Length: 396
Ligand SMILES: [Zn+2]
Image 1 (tube, protein in one colour):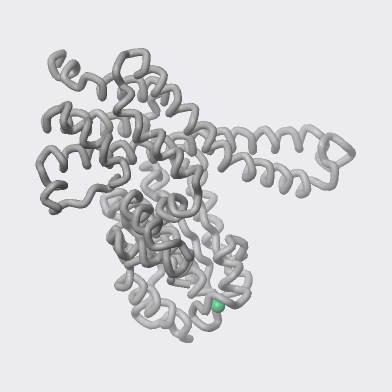
Image 2 (cartoon, protein in one colour):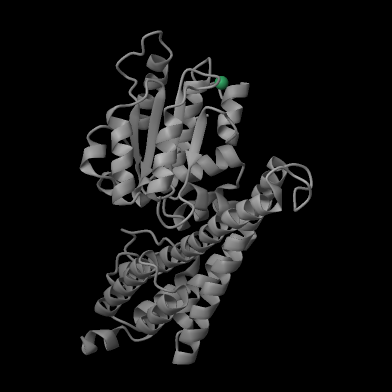
């Protein structure tokens, strides 16, 4: 069950000990009711949270096989709630509802586990609502907050949580995992491990999915294509269109399932026919659901674009390493070894200062997306900056 946590032995030991202590009649000191799981994207924060939740539910401390373990891992255990913000942030009302649910006794097991993914997206008021619940915890509630770093939650919350810090797994750790757990061949595993820069989920996708590899090649071919303004605009447009398409592939099945669940909750064939509460009630509920789904789609699109920007960052990181001579003397391995020809071409046609400016431009685009700038505008600004990074410099 802990196998999915690649290269995180220290964290696994702490969580395993906590689960053992949690199972005692009076829980031992290794267990506590609030945890903060931090680590870079893809290091396995939510995997760690789920595995820990399963260990708390399982009569054997996390066997990975029993009904409890399996239902936690499948996301269907009654006493384990995994919550992600549907929109860009957790709203105060979301936090209140959560805190209220936390006060309910577990229905099957000993604990009621609440996993908050992306807890860095809590607004300040939502943070404060949560703080109260963590300060005076209901006796059976266990909070697992997942964020990229400890600075992402209020210090008052941080000080009340036990901290589990996941690190970026090494390419060797990731490659070994792909070979052993996913039966990927050694060459593909190594490529995927390098290219994903320690993001395990991404590595798995790159190792197993030709479509993911193709997307990545398209993104990495952008730098060489930015020869004139027209290409800048068309590349920006293509990036946004791809992100939209990939986001739809993720959210559409979820949307359909949620709508089905909602309709069956209102009664068979509830769409407008003879149900208590009437058609208006169903329509209201559907409308509410659709608003939430739309906001999730928007967020997923932005996440997909950010993924593309990380690939581009990796590309220019290789360019910079090459310009410094570090890839020729072998001191630094290229992340994108399979794109070596393109990387060398871009490196030879520019200098280190320009590469630094381009890296800045990508970081700026990521911040713009985070600040809700329209994706199309943010990508156009980016491709224009990538083509002539000196222009912005001389303008400012
Ligand atoms: Zn089990």
